[in-house]
Image 1 (tube, rainbow, N blue to C red):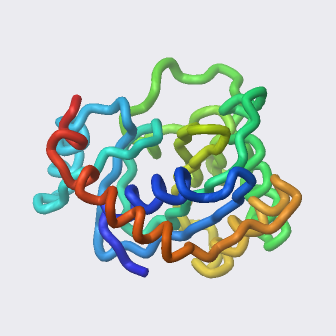
Image 2 (cartoon, helix red, strand yellow):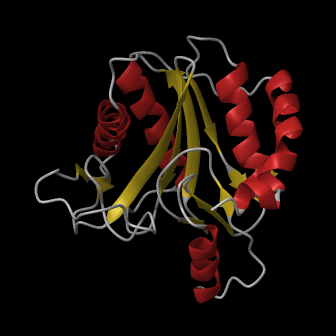
Length: 220
């Protein structure tokens, strides 16, 4: 169902907290219009400035509970994945598992991509997520970043919030969503659940006020 930034961020947190310990839950977002989210450690002022530079005068950026940079949701395929996160598994391993699986699924459908190498990475974290690729991001044949994500870990489970840019891939949205679904199944060896339980939605509604608040979004 279509939702706002605060609604989606709060539902993701609710699924992370309320789902079973072994949950593998994939959710695709439907947006009710253009939106901007930015990483937990990023500056609200910078996200707001970049929104205004795009001409998005009425868009209020929403801080995610995950890391990463600024993401503009204006036609991207946005998804979240809640998964069991073994304490010995590094964030790089998680990104590799998710993105390698999606790359293989895209290739099987005729869309060629590759994982960005860690060789000679650029220093620091780019403020805007799609300005440049980071190690284990998915890139197109021209080196353009097409898939990135951000992570949060809590009580033995993880949340990955991902964004896939469909431009230039030559595939329908439904096919690309299918590749994400197939990619997650490849990575974990089982198909993810896609049904969001009513109790999780209720818990998400209870968290939404925080994601709308000045105290959360403008905390730094």
